[in-house]
Image 1: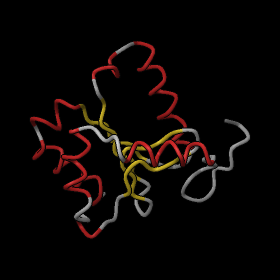
Image 2: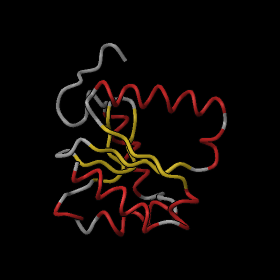
Image 3: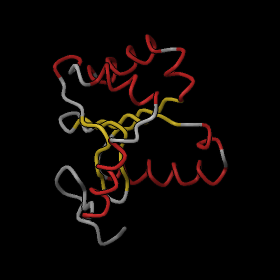
Image 4: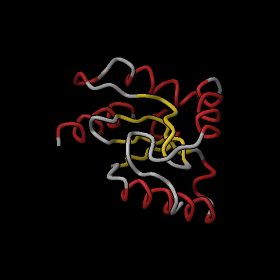
Amino acid sequence: MKNLNYSGMHYGATPQIFHNARILRYRETQEEKILWEYLKGKPQGVKFIRQHPCGIYILDFYCHILKLSIEIDGGYHLKKEQIESDNVRTKFLQECGVKELRFTNEQVNNQMTEIFKKIILEMES
């Protein structure tokens, strides 16, 4: 990761990461579909992109203007190894100046009003 160019909106993402992101756009989860229906409407007039390449990672949703990433975590994110990996990813994003909001699949399925409020609050801060 040390050789990555952290400038621009893709922070050194390789062509392979762009390819993987394109594939993920066609394999979105039900929870990603639900949140995308909200975000594609440009809440507060702000544009989000789905499956955005960023360094060696692919962000579920990203707003470049706000440098805001929104992630939806499935159950495997509760495993110790994945928690450690997520922490490394979060640190990378912080180094790039990107703020990260994380929600679980369960939250998306049961607490969308609260998620909308948190996203809007973050957009306004």
